[in-house]
Length: 402
Image (tube, rainbow, N blue to C red; front, side, top):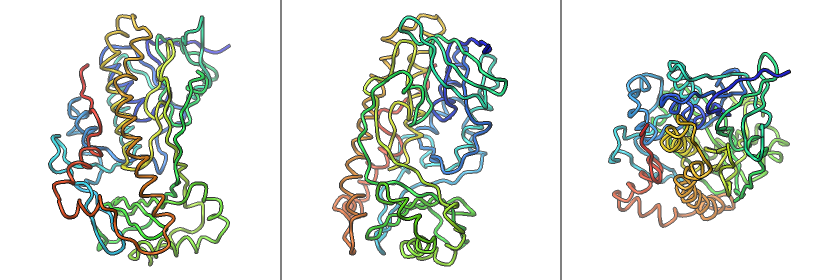
């Protein structure tokens, strides 16, 4: 027989949305249990961008000084090279936030930090190596989660289940929630290459006819994202890795002397890009947030920021209700009403860029001029504040109210 546990709130998924929601709710006095299926957070090529609005949340929690002691790289602007032409697309130095930069930090460090802070709270529990497998439903209401942990099957009874288990969410599938899929013209191949001392000292993107590469500066290495047409990974992998190395060198010439660090295709990971959103984010007793509610394109690296903002709004709106054990369906719908517009507008911008920029670049077979919007950023630097605000702060940034 499965063991039975109880919590006021059970959060499924120990990513940015799940851990932040669990931390904030426990900090507000709600008995909270977070389930994470892996034994640790050490997984490569996850979203590693901590945006100014997320740093602002960490400041509001009184944790910023400790957080910034963790190894990270600061990016005060984002640039793109189109051929031999460099265009600064966003400058964060005038944002109305305490930290006017993006912090590039391995996501496992960010999650370990949140978990460490949350474990100090008496009403927070984190169950690692515990994989949720289904929902417990009684009388049309979700009342808990079935899972398997290190000691075998377990049932967690909870007043509220928060599904924060990512873009391939088992919880939202088990709940039968309908997903709108908006599609994406590309996937991304992630890999690492060594960085030399005389390399550029900033993160940037490289654009060439038929190719795009994102370059994240990590001190001793570059984390690279090579954009390919949707579904094109299998065709690439049927070729020798040498052809891929040559394509990288042609796009980013200063890497040409170190592409042999990619020994074979095992050194290259595939990120399948999807953009989708739930029509309804909740059912009685269940709420979806983060990628489980709205999977974002990697454009702008805003997925972690949206997930954290969802968690902050969830705690702001639901903590008092959960403490009083008086939460109802409209309370859960209030989270969607608060966060759907930012998710919807951000996705709309991403879809526009996918269609009007990325699709055209991937289909191009000869050099091209930067789009008019980018040329305007070059001519009128003040315009860079608009993309900086959209990327760095997002739409309707949240603040800690609990």
